Each structure stands twice: as C-alpha cells, then as structure tokens.
Length: 241
Image (cartoon, rainbow, N blue to C red):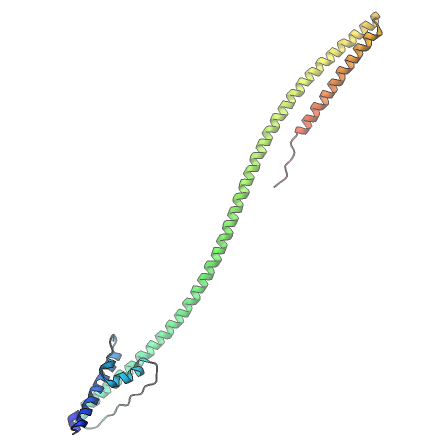
C-alpha cells in the first residue's frame, strides 16, 4: 500500500511503478501456475520482461518473501504467500514437464530402436521373399523341362512302336519271299536232279546251280539286313537330366 509509506513526489511515482511491476509479476506467476496457460503477459512490465528467461529456461531462480507482523499489512503478507505458493506450483509443474520430456526422449529412443529393428526385419523378409520367388521360378523351369521330356519320351515310344511294326511287317514279307525262294530252290533242285538223270548237258546244270545259289545268297543278305534294322530300332534307356 503506497499510502502507508508516506512517500510523495518522485518517490511516490517510483513506488507506483514498483507496485505495477509487482502486480504484473503476480499475474505472470498466476498464469504460469495455471493448468491451461496459453498467454503469459511478460511484456506488461520491465520486471517481468527481465525475469522472463528465469521462468521459461531451466535456470536456478530464488524468490524471497518478506513478511511483517503488523496487522495492517496482513493482506500484503497473504498476497506474498499466495505468490510463493504459485511459485512452488510452477516448480512442481516444471519438474513434471522435465520428467515428461525425459520420458518422451526415452520413448523416442525406444521407438527409434524399434523402427530400426523393424526396418532390419523388413529387409530380411524382402530377401527371403526374393529367395522364395527364385526357388519358385526354378521349380517352374524344372517342371516345364520334365513335361517336355515326358512328351519327348511318349513321342519316341510312339515312333518306336511304328518302326517296330513296320520292320515286323517287312520281316514277315521277307520271310514269305524267303519261303517262296526255298520252294523255288527245291523245285530247281528236283529239276536239276531230273535233268542230271536225263543226261542234260553240263552247261545247263551249271547255269541252274548258279541261279539257285544266287537266290540263296540274296535271301541270306535280306534276312541279315532286316535283323540289323530291328536291332537298331530297339529303344535305349534315356539318362536322367
């Protein structure tokens, strides 16, 4: 209370300025101690502008509260006590904020570690996926190769059966021809004996004998050639790819 000081003139003006600064300081302290402070009026006085860094930065700050035992100054003592309580709340609030910031930093570090581990796991999963796709492609190629070999085998078996059937028919035909030649040979031998007994000239006998021998040689050649073709047509066991 300025009137209790008995000041006048320039001292009174200075006292009023000090009171305004102290009132602005009380408003700042109350705003900082509030649960939902959006605007802190630091610029309402020179004192609050000077003390702004002490409130918003993590620096040691001490406030001394003076109390008077006179009854007339009880209200001032109460106001100072309220300001001190507000400052205590500010300190507790700042401590909680610091703890929250520390917890947030630890959480961010853990999140960064988890994110890094996730990226590593994702990379390993991508590598495994590439290996799986490569194995699937290899299996598909091998499956196509197996189907191709199976088709080729069936085609070769079909051609072999056709070749064997053709050779068997040819062999049967040659055997019939061979039988006919044998019959003709027997007839010629009988004729030869008959002519020999009847006294036919030797030149005719030699001619018939040569013709008979020639027919027998042809039959043997045809038989050997047919057997050789049949042996060549026999299928061989294909090696594994």
